[in-house]
Image (cartoon, rainbow, N blue to C red; front, side, top):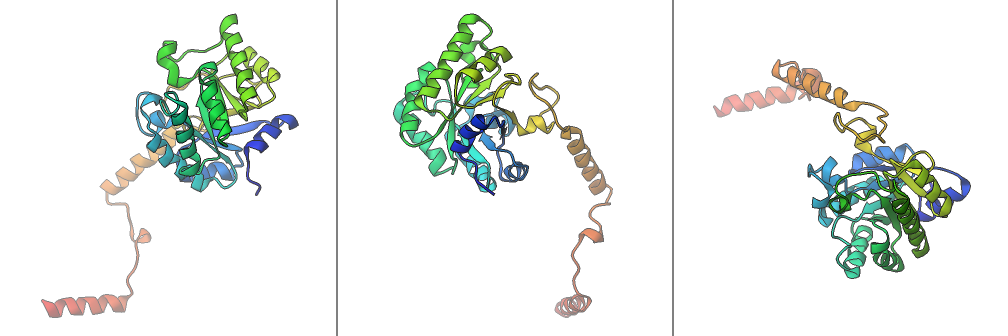
Length: 283
């Protein structure tokens, strides 16, 4: 079982092989993803919404991200593990950016980090890479910037906006990112970016022409409730299955049908007799 590395991801584009990435947040899920042969696991800052119940990604902390990255890293024996740099872990200073990126590798045992942003973040991204830490870029809809964008909107729909994203992708390539996530951009723009940069593009809501795709595990398993973005495909719908199983468990416990002796451990008869005799004597 050969370990996937950032070099492997870059070489996949050269071979015309699609990159498959899943966002996940815990050990048992990472084991299943790894067993399915997925190439990379992103410990996304979507942890904030999906697992921790925050209303947006801005609230999740570095310590929370490290905690879950450790769990994923224990389960991922083959897949590349990428830690997602949370809001304000890199924006304030280059020193913060390097220090916090380093925590993902040193404490979280990730093998790379993902950083949102283009031109305004380019010097910090370059500094992280020059410190020996591989970086996955992220352009288009960058959720940590949603207040600045005025909400969660498709990016790059005008000529000027599309041109800016293309230039940012080329800047990221020049400073040495090993791949670029393109989120919620028109498929035509994603196709153009993919053709113009030599590093793999990984799409989410960016159409079929990227070099790879990523989805959140809860979305693709149908565990994220009734409302999902247009770009999500549910490969199974576990919401109803899990809810029914929990309802069945509740009903059987309330009715005294679970557990039965079938689900119980047995004491040898002679040991039980000894216990009862001892109990009677002491009374």
